[in-house]
Image (cartoon, rainbow, N blue to C red; front, side):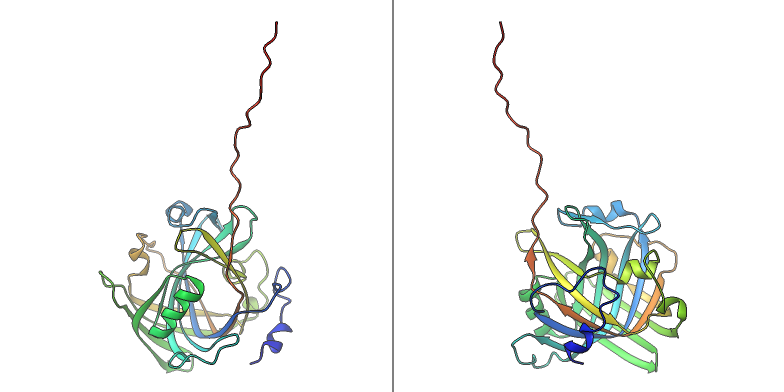
Length: 271
């Protein structure tokens, strides 16, 4: 679909589209959103300076998203050969800019089955991409099996499971601010850090097909343990989306919050 089609659908955004022109667009397909509540304190040391873990119902949230991507394009460049249809797997959380309170996403890892896409994304966005051997198989119209094993990794990082969408419901279609699904999905800013560890931001625009409840059987999941986090034993909150169109604006530096410095005051002796 052309960008013009998505520009019409902006009523779900909390603020207008970013200024300037998007730099990259892509489409995510057959997504599972699996989320676990975790204490915000467990994430604090893993976030760049300037970001705070965002919370809902008293917890921060850690999400794992398997899907397959297509329609990847950088503005002004021809399509990347061999990078037009491949699986991805994201581990992410939800944050706020400490200075502006802007809500956004912070990604701990992004595994992809296309080496060219991994190299390009690392150069373009500084996101923590990893090359992986991946397999996504469609079992029925809304049921999928997904396997990923990270390559060039000292320790095995494997994700394996099956998931299925249960069909859209009116409740999810009409979800509003204050619901968990709104907290998790209505985010229009992606944070990252550059090679020097400084905070950077990319503005986003995305349009999703109707969100659905989902079921999943996760047989193995090493992603959280790879960054030193133990997931709770409770079952994750699960959603499914058939399509998600994503537009990414150029990455820009985030000005850090100014530190308060003591002011020297000249004292005139009395007497």
